[in-house]
Length: 270
Image (cartoon, rainbow, N blue to C red; front, side, top):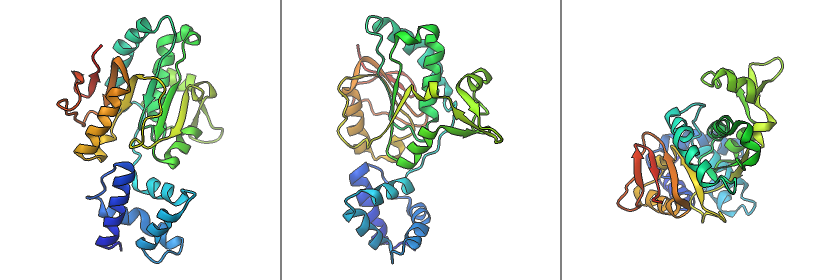
């Protein structure tokens, strides 16, 4: 069982490196790490953290992050966002970027891939036969290498796809023979660029984004971390660009001058 001192050490490390607040998650941290520590013959959590901090390959730190982060998402989650994206944001972008044919869309909490693939399906549906004239690729990042590998593999069960419209399921997925599983077709996979990225790090983008999806990730941050992240997001949005956050999340506009379009949808002034 994890001691209070060991738990504090993990909480401080994860908060400093990744901005994630685990201070109320002692039982979860213990439950997720205990078996891994025992299996790898560390005597206690402190010895494991010694390994994390001294492993120059970064492998053990990645394992820690994979264990303590939650990657719960599903297709069609908060679909009102995708309706607004298709009905309002994309027509605006099509007019704005008609000369360049360039869209810069970032999904900052990609998890196991459902959200960026949803965005890609909406883009394909919206642009249709004009799609070849546009660069519609999406940057999808997450902190968890385990979740990203699932996203890159793009394999989902029939149950996971139950809410996806039938025409999308037929067009963008193929059945894995002899199973109740589906795999994302290469045509759609090519539209999403998956990368591991820590939101606490400096943003590496050369150009500003037109739309940023940062949904259901800020619930893991304290107020100061959240405000710092939102300031970076604001700076890296094009004028007029949109930010989507989770429907249960809030945004303090006293520190970042976003215009509120509707709850969980915000815009940078043009």
